[in-house]
Length: 324
Image (cartoon, rainbow, N blue to C red; front, side, top):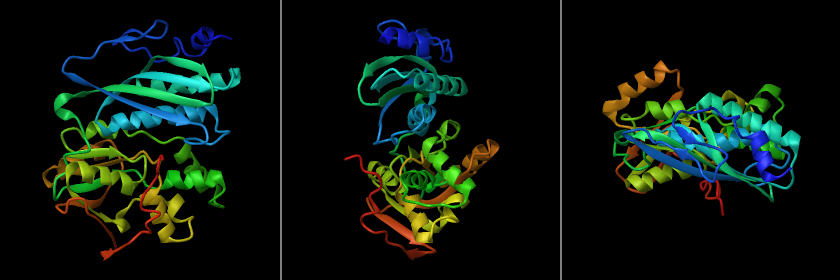
């Protein structure tokens, strides 16, 4: 099967059709139309076997995570996803793998109302590069910068689950509770991009970022770009029962919650005067959120408290995920 037959059989015509796509898969490039008074937001992520997913991960799980991590970036900007471009490198043409992979791509495109409009396929190590694009009104863009002294710090969902799930798959963490084990592994394999939360936070949050490399590392990005300090109350961190009840200590649960990557929850800051609006909006959609600290005026300073006492993590665990 050549490249063009592969694209035609597994990807062309299977994606959700959008009216703003003038020309999609099948030509040298796609042609799309950006809605009036909207900004185009673009993000790209590459996932490589044995780096971002373990060898033997199912095609459906790979497809799911590839799309989810990109949509999470758009969510952090307050953008509504619209278009995807996929570059797929694989060692050989495996029809069963491609069927499972492309079926999940089609399912997610339908669920999020996005269209796969182009890409490339090549022979090589199994890896995937996805570019996702979406729209956000210019006056409503969320950025990492913008946090101010006194703003409250929130996160969606729970923290640390994905890191624990990865350790389970690697054999580094043993959990006897089958239901908890499956929950944590699924949180690693299939993170939920908080697209709805991102759009809800427009005009409310002062800063926002998605948690891909660990809470401490990612909150530092907000601190650095906003020229502020950060105070985190570790006893307030939302830790799922599956994690909290199945690791051997509170310290281990906090280590997962603060430093492990791949949670893809949103971390955002909210001024005091916007707290009620934020709570009303997120509550109306049953979006889980937790206040975990406050922005301070001590630029570049990170303070960690546990039950109102200073808490120190080891220098090795404070860094979070490192790409190099």
